[in-house]
Image 1: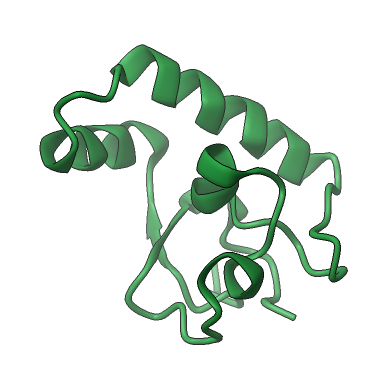
Image 2 (image 1 turned 90 degrees about the vertical axis):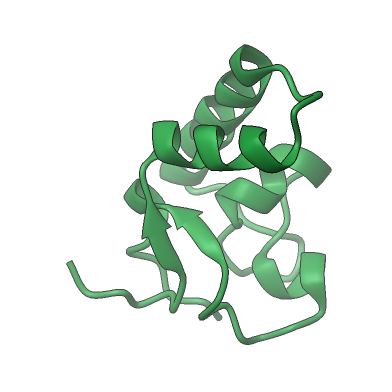
Amino acid sequence: MPRASGFKPIGLRDYVRLHSKSNPDVEEADLTLRLRETLEKYKAGTRCSCGAPIWVIGSAEVGNMCFKCITGSIDSSEDYEIDEACDKAMF
């Protein structure tokens, strides 16, 4: 699948493991649930207030927002996104 978004695709379970390694206080079950719920919102067409598709990984932490609105950057090439959401165009 082409990477329209520019993100580095990662499986949900792989991301949870990676995140937990850097953030040992995070409950994996809670993070997994938040990511799955946010992924479902993405699949249902939820958009950031600016109109762009939400960034699942970021939105699971801060609410339904796109990468640019969360980070202030347009370069997502060094950032992860759940692989099922990597079909989106950034803007």
